[in-house]
Image (cartoon, rainbow, N blue to C red; front, side):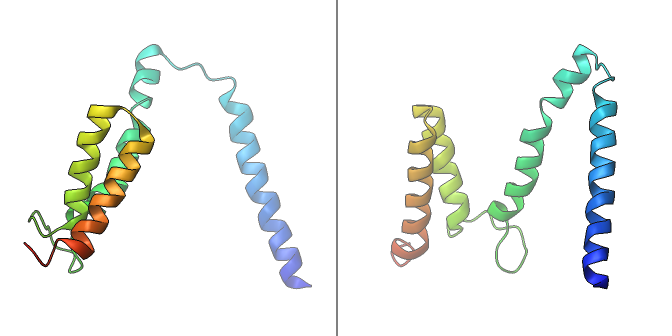
Length: 109
């Protein structure tokens, strides 16, 4: 019974905090410069999440060699995204190059 009350209390506190901030945010008007600066936040956060996964190896060291399959796939995906401007082609190219470089071509290099 205590666990149910604890979870219910945590839900109530979380809902209260989020709803109060949401209601308060309706009253705040941001300047054009602030809105423009905040538009870059998703790109920055996504880059901060993806970059370490691409640039590091299993030993958590910087790996910029041709033997890094994630780096090769990322470069291929960037090129295809720039060339085709299609999310589907970018995903297929990135995953295909990653699979080939991880399991197929590493024995030849």
